[in-house]
Image: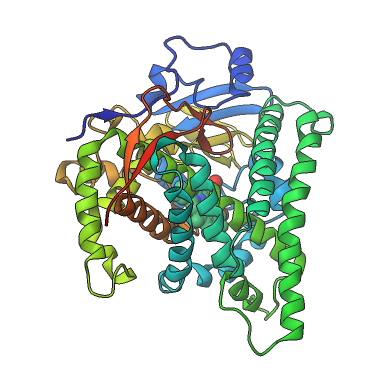
Length: 459
Ligand code: HEM
């Protein structure tokens, strides 16, 4: 049983009035929660845009996520916030458009295809090790930046077969950080029922969205030029699978549709993984005992004949459980909104068409009635018989049902690789004076960065 409790946002003891709540939520959606939020089965908030419901009762959550996605479609709130950068990509699309996209994109993310990108992930992990080696003398390392760099590099290498240049990395980090802040602010503006056309945040976000899309669009265009010049030898990567994919009528994605999908994969694919890896490294710094056990596991993997390879993942149970437990405590997608398309009764409430419903991995994963020691970092809970039911019903970092994360296996594989490389080559120590502060905007991050100290290991 672990004893490390990672940082939490403020938990309010008294309910805020709706106006104060919206004003507070402008900066972070989890610091408006109060003690009761972590024990209740269902809560609601009035907003000028309509009622919002939070469902924490596992059987209802499961029913909603596993229903026909047209009945509980992705919320327009999500579209309003992300459209500028993702276009009508798979993360925000709905109905027939989404079905077509999902069918065309699924083959690129099947398990067998994911193990094909192992070597590309390892190349990015080795480049990360080289960068960190230069800092591993006990100085403070801003590990959330480093994880963003390696996660974005992994996505670049697996999508485009190209490493991410330092210049592109810096452009994307700063553009996406600014975009994320403004887009979230715009989401809260929409929640308040204010007119889209007057949203200053939306206008400012457009500039950053354009920077990201221009860069990714250029890379897609370059591939088409390359294919035209050399059709015999196409690269074997995710972009190639998407270019080859056809729908039921044999039609391919257009270049503009491809740019939408690449923007989704790039952003949904690196931000989430980077956040989880940073929190996992922080927690390993705090929990020396788990770090030691994990290192023993990883040293054994590296000692196998031929070195670390995909077939060794089965020897990495604790490493994978560290990643899974971090996803429980710090789910990068803390809220999953859905729109209600018909009047219905949920528990004792008359829920009207047009309302928004939130399934919250953040609340479900820390629910006082579903988990033993919910705030404690305890990767071994994934091996315990008495927690199996909680894991089955109240654990969903990747969501569930037809719109479950397309990149879940991809993320589990990259998470295991990066954590393995970190414990193999470095000893991770905490920086006592720097406690990260969880903040949830579009994704869950630390407001003041995540810092650790690294010391090189003799291997
Ligand atoms: C730790 C890492 C990750 C977490 C926790 C995560 C979580 C999620 C969640 C919760 C959703 C559903 C959101 C909703 O329904 O509103 C989602 C959707 C999605 N994710 Fe991930 N994700 C991760 C990594 C990735 C990666 C690495 C990729 C791709 C390379 C990816 C691609 C997608 C896509 C394409 C969707 C939209 C699927 C659809 O709507 O059909 N994700 N993710």
